[in-house]
Image 1 (cartoon, one colour):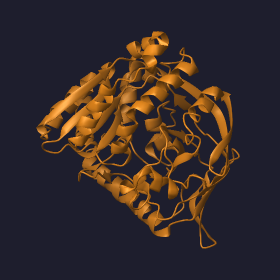
Image 2: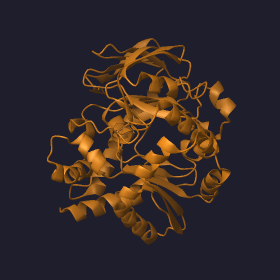
Image 3: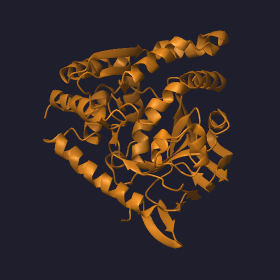
Image 4: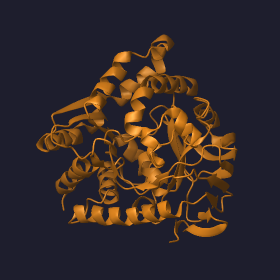
Length: 409
């Protein structure tokens, strides 16, 4: 297939399997100026599928960078309610929410961590009431990516400059399974496999997981009663089956918020607002991260987990085998959307309420009582590699879940 055929396949997968536009559904697309060519294709397909309206909300990287550097602190602290009201209006009208990103990993490298922290905190406070519509899968939502020059330069520095973007497109097409003759079959096969793994984990209801690796990871994660493992597509409360991340390789659940102990070593850098936290480890006691060590940008990570009182606790545990399309590419993408699907990972902050039976209908107090964390943030970091071993425990028996970085069942 030529480039245009693959691009059409990609757009089709995003609209039909990612957000799964339904007749009469409003669609909100959040994107950047660099992604507009692809967004126009998505908009056309969405209307062809019967979308009632498509609202495209556009930002520009360079303008965002200048604002982050030069906006007054008073303006940063001002959180206009109309931004929240607009998103709540669409959510209540059963809209789908699609983000099309064109990453620039180094965009905010010259902005002070304090300003980045302030901007993140103000936005998180403002949008907290909207967060439940995606975290609880009330509405369908999806995140996808297209190349930018800055991203291609970062991911493929050894490729000649004039070929970097086209090679990054080829990588994306392969990773999102649209480069073959039958993308629908490729996605169906993947969905069947990942759902089988999730079914086994849900039937086993492991009481705790133990992680180890050659880097030195020695981490125990207790699981709450009636937890659920989710992989591949999900069903929204509005009755729409959607795939939240494209690409996706993970099966995830929520850990018991106060049941994490030990030390874990990251296997990939963490990109936070255009800065990289590199070669870091985290020590947990009774669920809380009590020690952070990083070779670079340690304070940025420390500030992140101080966002609120629960930000230092975990909200997600995700299993991704090392033998996967993204991992096998041997590339570091400097984008959580891709890198988290190349590696087992954890996430600080809010858990998805759908990761426990009946969680979507629980109040924040009920979720906390059942061991499900709540926070203004949700930030993934990668911990898996080819040496990762994971043991599940149930009724004093051990079960191998991962061996040498891959599924053991």
